[in-house]
Length: 242
Image (cartoon, rainbow, N blue to C red; front, side):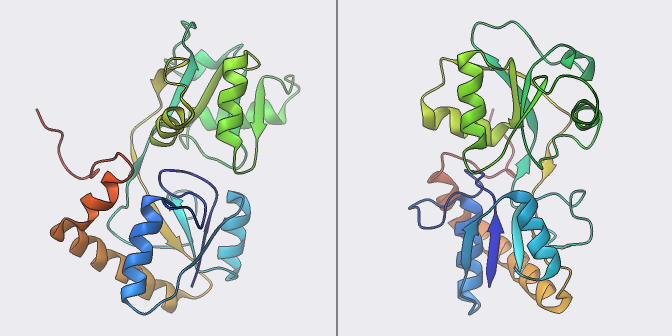
């Protein structure tokens, strides 16, 4: 079966990597046990949605129900996502609300939704209006976040927005810990899922049912924690320790 997504580690990385992303590790183990052979590849997010919607691929990784409401989802989340802003270490700017974006050169990734609310509307309005294109700078491709962070550090943009888990993971990977600071979260954390094609509902329901059953099994056995530890993560469903 075919699984697609854009490059979004630690949720999902490149096929063939030792650590292709914890969602890929989980899905592969569950579906392999059920007799499916997983074919995973990274493509642009907008294309992944289009191909899954048409039935060219089976499922996409790291989706929100609000993004693709016509898709078929498992019930138990495979993580959570909350968007956040980041700035250079010497900048004092912090996100309070969408008016904080006035005058800010913001780096975004094409096709992404960040809050399904005021921030997304601000970005869409800026891109559709006569505001200079330098105000909202759109990056696409597998290394879009890395390029945005490099632009931030070089001073070509003032802030970057992205999934906090993904940005933190990438900052650590690139060694930018002392160069980039967190500048405020947007909204609340949303549950993340693998979403399957509405074009083949029976097959999709079978795939998501296997995911639900497998997640329960892996959490109970401790296998879920083992996979997450490879990525420096903890189970999103577990309470924080005091």
